[in-house]
Length: 314
Image 1: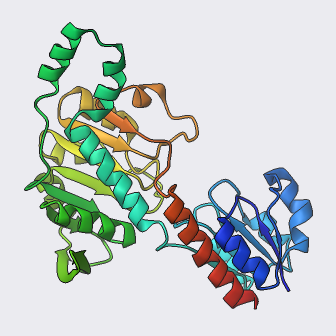
Image 2: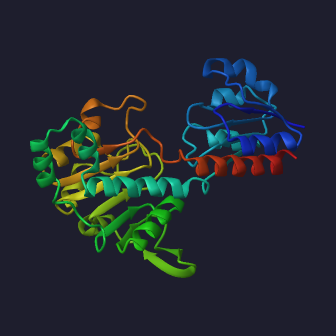
Image 3: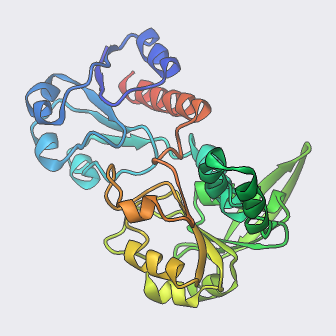
């Protein structure tokens, strides 16, 4: 029996799997400042994005065997230090891919048909303004036939590609680690294989109507003023990956100049307090970092995490 700390929550299905496997599971959150004193008695800790498992904490816990991350990114865990001490570091990269991809698609439709603006303005309308809005928002875009550019052809990027192809869009990708990516589409019970060719960033930027980011955390933005200048006029950018991958000042400049048609953002530089001019911009659709926050994704994360813990801890 292992003693496991689930510090940022887990779906009841995953918790049941761990307890039925005989493990002692604590789900009461220990605050970050108290972990140094309390974590040494545990064999494993599982976190989401809130709890940080840094080198000083790892060095203070010689009994630690597994660090689990419910989600994709490992930015809040000092992975190399943990592995150097023989500690397994696990995550759940496949569990939430579809949920994130569907949110990206939601932002795409929202911006294409002015849904964010309409939902804000219509509750306060009079009959005259209704007609004005009907006229103003009658110039939306269909996505069929448009090009979706995907930066990062990992699991989530591939899910976005599948949805885009199903909508009749063209898809191009750019990935520094891949020359192409094979995906399989399931449409009406039929399985169709498709190859996404990886092109240069410049080619992707120049030819895409919608651009979706699916990359890990970076030291500096990969989309800034230069990249915006290379995009098609009126292009839309979508980011449900990591805050900081887009230069937010350059983003606002591109929107205000008319170069960029819109932006759909689920992640921000200053979470949990994004800047007000980003949140209130009329051509930005925003959500509070909820890409993986669906019931299905949370259950899948719990199951995937529990299976790995059981395999590693017995």
